[in-house]
Image (cartoon, rainbow, N blue to C red; front, top):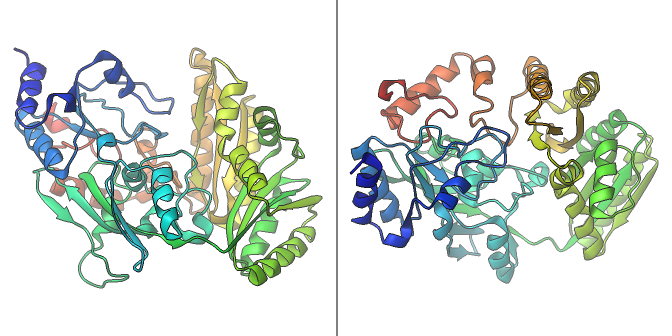
Length: 463
């Protein structure tokens, strides 16, 4: 009996048969995410149904010196869940219960396999909603692991801002809680912030307590077209400086608008465009809308349309969220690379202009979109995986925009995370602070058990 077979039999002593799989199809499904990074298959997949199951798996992994890789829905974009050292993939799809809604505290307690849309469906009964919207219907455990954000972060903040408490299974199988139910605390180190964004390298999230919000009384969306990207970004800066409490503000460049119209069968003006949304009560919203209209007109806005109708608003945001699929659908046979950098807002117009120049110089095919309210933008880049020259150009472009962001006080990743793709930029971005991160990793996971070859740590000592 080989090691994998022995591991399988050992897991059967603690889990039910249906919770363990070495099925070839499932193995292949868990060998990749939605990124362009090369796949690698796990030895086995387990489907825990409780924290106790996760404890058991981690302890058995320790005994067999096998790495453990947490897996949500596989929607990550930097290779986070690809098991390059094989081992055990822990698929949290069966830990998908909303455990408690504390509506008077604006808190909800969930298992990590609950998806964003599943949670919001449950919260709607209480007049509440969960704010973080990365576009993909990701699991909340995965969103915490990568510190996801998205279109609403300009008003409500990113995933880290919503986490009140996490239940974590550590590398030795110990279970800890990182926070509490209080709105604030000055007690001890902030372990919530340590584990949010740790990408499964420090422990397995088995429960989350999250902040939620009341559903706004009124919602209005808008679409504003500009002659240039600079005009659009400068309009956003003016809106923020004016203190307008805007809930979403997204930039979609001209090539992306063309792709959106083709895919979503819309007829939006094919110019640099802001997609906006406002939340509030009716009198306040009316004032915000009028003020915003004045501001964008001062920045050469050529047309602005407001959408109060729910169906029209949904169509607008579906067109925005479906842009990645629009590019994939419009370029059959090619693979999507989604870049992800974040810069100070004052540097955003220059960063996007630089990105477009580099895309054109390298003769690549891609659109630029961004959560411009917080300085985060993406290039949706289509590339031929069989063309070495095109792959090299795509990597070159990614490196150039990262270098540009870092030189201006930005970061190599605003929301997608480090995974395998952004590890090479960590030392340049963090300097000596990276060594502090490595020490934390060694202290909490001395054998490199959790998600090796990601974020900060390799497993040299075990190779």
